[in-house]
Amino acid sequence: MSPSAAPKECRLNLRATKEQHAVIERGATVQGQNMTQFVVSSAYEKAEKVLADQRNFVVSGSRWNAFVAALDKPVSRHDRLARLLSEPSILER
Image: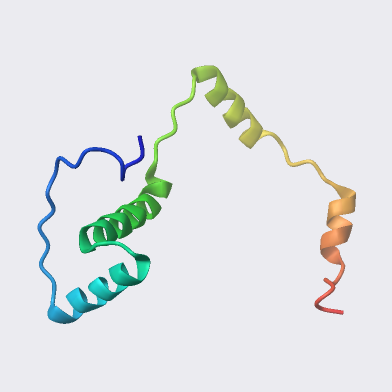
């Protein structure tokens, strides 16, 4: 079930300046949403972006060991890639 389709069980109480309220109200109108929909969806989207790098990833011990081994593995030289990166780009010609 998407967050917008879930039953609404919590209340958010907000205080804003008249200018903030007017801008938010205009934004909601342009998006075809009411103030609640607009504020909640905007805050939810922002929170997801902020939390994106804060997520915990759980892996099994064997997968973790494989990941660490890949990180510890010596770098292999790729001659074609080194040559490509040493040439001026099409924008620099």
